[in-house]
Length: 299
Length: 269
Image (cartoon, chains in turn cyan, green):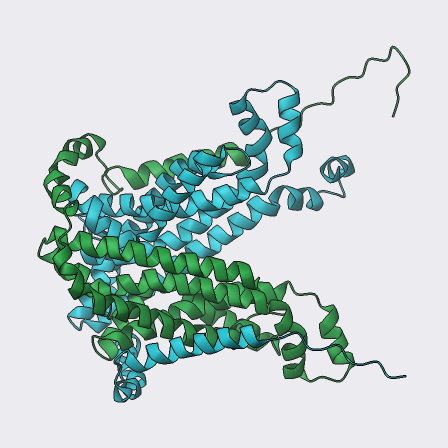
């Protein structure tokens, strides 16, 4: 007896979707207005640029203090006020702190399980709206008019955008909690705020702090462009040196950006791992001397 | 566990508080203070800021009164932004696929390739999208090609990083099965690893497409094509009512794209 093979599920819909996507891509590629000859020039142009930046004449190390953003005059160390990598890092840090402080309560209000339906929907839409604006647009349209040109406007722009992204992530983490501790807190007669403080916050805080650190890494990159519109940071140096073909200076600035970013990424990544897995990892390391602590942690 | 009646149980001693948390809080406060205020920081002066909020009033007045007659002139640059994002997403995500497989211990052929790819990837990720745009504008010329090239590099960084982490976490059973069946390395990746990570790959790709729309709107500021150039020009000439037209348009546009993308991601994953 032969058993007929079951019929293949229809893949018409999937094929139609793929065809639609392919047509969209083809339309975009054909009408974008890129001259194919230009594409062929790209590797050569890039090669020449890199050659001048990093080989001959190569990075100009005298520009290093400008790129990092400090001056040493008569032995006195001072930070420059016109850009530099340190200023970029500061803008990113302050922006992340603003974003973290404001997004924590907003994230709770946006979470469906601890907030009411209407409030959470409303806050969610506000967060979505904030996220739609790139940092540099926020700087141009809101914060440069208020704070004037300078790093303060940049930090405020980064901060507002971060509220949008961090608020959404916070809400998602809060929605994923174990309801047990919340119930337990309620059963002991905790007031609503106490329920959040003792039932929810301890569950979500490690993950949220990890998101803050991750956002700091992203904000360093986002802060780079702010210098172009006059909102502070190393973007100013990058744009000026490249626009005026001072490629050996640009090479120095690029190296400063790459090294500083990788350093911060590494440190922040280590911290994030430590925060998410840290307590357990430490206990595991001490198992030999103090078995009872390991038992407590496992329970 | 039950105790004999009348036994008083002593509370276990509280564990000594770890010094890490207070030290971390102190470090956080010191860094934040240093970053905020003179002499080292960005020089935030809250009093002056509060005073100057009114200084923006004139500008906000213009911003809140968008000049809709400007709208037709924004359509073509906006479409260019969209096209740049589409083309860059497709190329970037395609290149990111092999890069991601070489950046995971599970699928990299040997340690040298793995380490080389990882280091290259961390440099690629350390360069912000706007710096790529500056570099490509200097290498070729002003225009959409520089924007596409910059976003391709940006996408490789994002997608390859996320995907290589997903590959790190795949179930190794199917890999073993494929090897036992005599599959070579390519076949193993194709039939054991790729099917496991494909939904994530699609999700990451759609996610970067959303990022690209926002990024390509910005890259025009340094001449990499799209709406960014126009917004920067209007800002330079203080045409605030034109700036606000673009801002509103960009908002609606990003919102629509994101809604579609989220709906697609939910259906696919």
